[in-house]
Length: 449
Image (cartoon, rainbow, N blue to C red; front, side, top):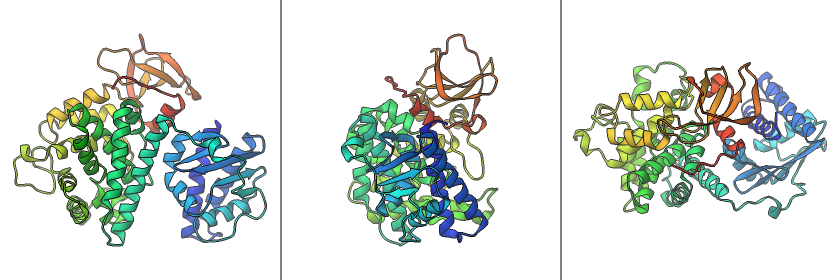
């Protein structure tokens, strides 16, 4: 595994450890398993770096020594914010990493202890790197920051609703302005970033992805900047009403019963009411989007609407399209993720009934026949990933992800798509990769969207 991959695993294990320690005592078997995993990950990372490694936290990002962990920073952004709230600016791991130190770190991050690691194999805030050594003003950093700040907005909104306080839409407005600006200036990079997924924070990541996809589709549909900002608020907050739904229902692994489904169907009204309670003049459309995004083009969805299908708001019909695409391509507790091609097929099948056919056509044109991040089985048995938006008849841009004999490559290799026959499209779980991380790893830059 590369240093980036080892660091990502460590961050996941530290998040799991702090979560377990908040639920169960140190001696509990599941906490012991989480501690063992985190200690092993920390030792593996330190050993791979020659015996000592530093994880730094700066603004919206994690750094491994001087190297930005761009994907991990978004993937583990909740952990990043938690660590920052505890005053952690850096963590130094020294091999051999002591389990007792990792346990102290987990308890400190979870807010269960004020004691920092004591055995000197895990040290806090002793980084040799200064802010100027780490910070980046690149365009990609600005895009990731806009994504991260949008996640922060949703976490803040969720916290407000949990305590029956109003949502701060002024913060949401500022965040979507940044996301609109970055999506317009870097449309291809933004679409690649919208392949980010999170099982633990599904609703938040899904909502930011829908926001990015909606901005891109809105831009393609001729909306101006001011209209895009209004659209973006609605897209970002379209699912905020799910905060009012019991998490056990949202994460239920099987078919919902009648009462559970009734609760799910309330989230558009709950979201619209929460937005209206906080909306300033001109922001009421966001509440309309939240209310109508499941109503369907022909009016057959929920909540039931009495207006004709053409009277559903333009933004609601647009967001319904992007919402469905991202939801289908994301793994949920009750079903696996589907391929991008399958998601486009669902949109096509529902075009004219569930979805506005104009937006379906435009969206397929936007993302292409095989959207970036698509994993394709080739005739020779290799698995390749699409790295560039492609139209019908174009030669695809690939990187080789898995060889014909089943070997996953740590460093994907560019390969020609000429004369390659595609026999199937695969989901990430079948291949054992994370497309968003791979797209970042190969440094994809796509100019045409």
